[in-house]
Image (cartoon, rainbow, N blue to C red):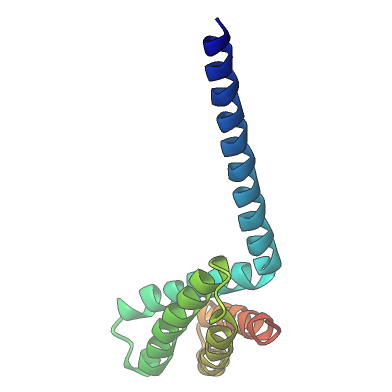
Length: 136
């Protein structure tokens, strides 16, 4: 009987330790994401806008939009990389965010030159992502 109680006590202790460790890991992960939340959200919004511009104008074979589409693709790549590094709380996140900010600013300038409403929205979203990435 004593052995059974001892085994059950050990099992209970191990279960509690695992639960505490899992809770601590989740709390740390949430704290990291909260720390970068505004920038991650802005980058994700920028990615969505750039994808809309790319999808809308690639189908039209709009030669006039070629540079804008290329910059949107670069923006998607850089924003995606920045988001991944921020979520991982990587020490490289700050450098990637600065690169992302430059790409977003360039994309915003080009999108502003276009007459498309989608491109104008993209320019606004790119500027917001650039602003928050610079603040990282």
